[in-house]
Image (cartoon, rainbow, N blue to C red; front, side, top):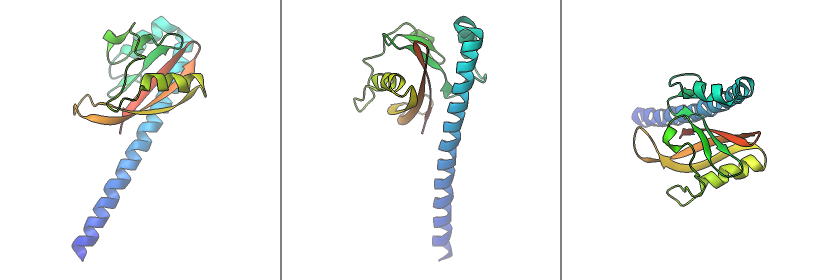
Amino acid sequence: MLRVLSLIMSIFLFSFSSIASAADKKETVISMMDSAISHYQEVGEEQAFKDFSVKDSEYNKGEFYIFITEMTDFNLVFHGANAKLVGKNLSKLKDTDGKPFVIAMREVAQGPGEGWVTYKWTHPVTKKITPKKTYVKKTGNVYFGIGYFE
């Protein structure tokens, strides 16, 4: 009986820690987004992009990085993890389930102006397909995105 109770408590604690972790990640993304957009508006695009590129900074830490896409043509104008993507139109990109998540991000940016998009993507560390949540927020003629893996 003690083993069963111990197992139930372990499962409960593990489940609770996962929920807390997701909540912490969500909070980190929203805080980072607000800070990044304020900084972008304050210092301008050129300086902001330099600052957003600095690894292990408040704008680029591990799985949390900024990307910025033009509203009109889907061209990526900045990517904190992969500069090779800058200038590319990613509108045809789909996740492993066929979800056109870049289109979904733009729809959120055009509609309510901000919100979450969930899709599946390759985790950079584990290399496994993993659910990812990305928060997008429109400012001017671009939208910012910052995501995390679940």
